[in-house]
Amino acid sequence: MRWIQELKTPGAIIALLAADKTLTRPQLAERIGKDIRTIGRTLAKLQQAQRIKRVGSDKAGHWEVQS
Image (cartoon, rainbow, N blue to C red):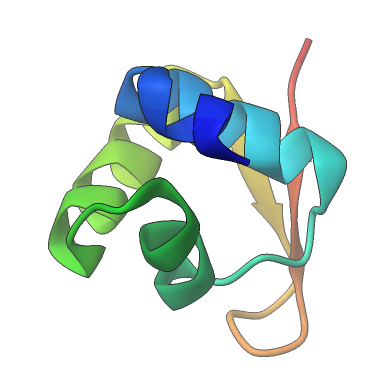
């Protein structure tokens, strides 16, 4: 999974969520090697750009990567 750290943060998040839509912010931060606040900001930007969508609740929901 070293290749994931070579991607820019938005690309890495999209790649990880495409593979596993149930990943949490802490899990994304750990796998990418970034701070959880960075992950949160990037997720918000990706949602605003309609690249990803949160389906369901924060606890029981999942992410969908928009094509």
